[in-house]
Length: 271
Ligand SMILES: C[S@@+](CC[C@H](N)C(=O)[O-])C[C@H]1O[C@@H](n2cnc3c(N)ncnc32)[C@H](O)[C@@H]1O
Image (cartoon, rainbow, N blue to C red):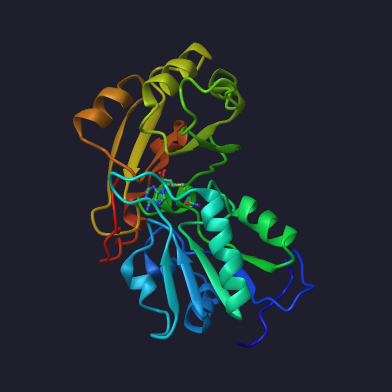
């Protein structure tokens, strides 16, 4: 393969092939970067996650070895250690390996852990950023994430921490006052707890919110509600993963007229 731009190379001292940690974007293939597109056409092996539509996988050459390491419905996630060893093995066998992740590899995608592991093994790694779902989802319904009137700060936060996790790291009560806009990934499962803690932290129960499911692809839908009704309405409307939740006055600044049409492609699984 031709030389890639190497501004963000972590390590480069062996004869192994190179692993590119590539962001596939949120689903609409048109949102992939030119670099991601080019690498998919050139790679010898592709290791990919859930949430990457088939239309994107079809960009690889017939000879490319494909390996799925995402979560299948009803099954546990692939253990991270196993993914790491697959990446290492492929780097020993192939010249150009693409590790494709939904959205951006370094936003709630364990890309940092994989880059660190590979660099420690002496494998050359390069990250190719992607459009993260937290930016794409509001954009695809015409909703800006910042606004001079009400959105001078935005926080991207995961709602995935287990409720009984001994050492929780997200302080929702503090976030209630710390940021004008909250963009929550993987928030549906723990939504009751999140809303309770935000309200106890002082956020107004009438704060506008939106849940956006399957953003940028076929089946994209959303519901706008006040914070106090977020749990009941998202349950009533049967919202499921993948969904992004946005909380903040910015939700009222939606300009529907500028929403792009979602792409006519399907997310591979819903879990
Ligand atoms: C493991 S995280 C990966 C995030 C990804 N690295 C990114 O930058 O978008 C998966 C979560 O991202 C969000 N997500 C990803 N794609 C989405 C989409 N097309 N629509 C809505 N939410 C999405 C959901 O909150 C989902 O549960």
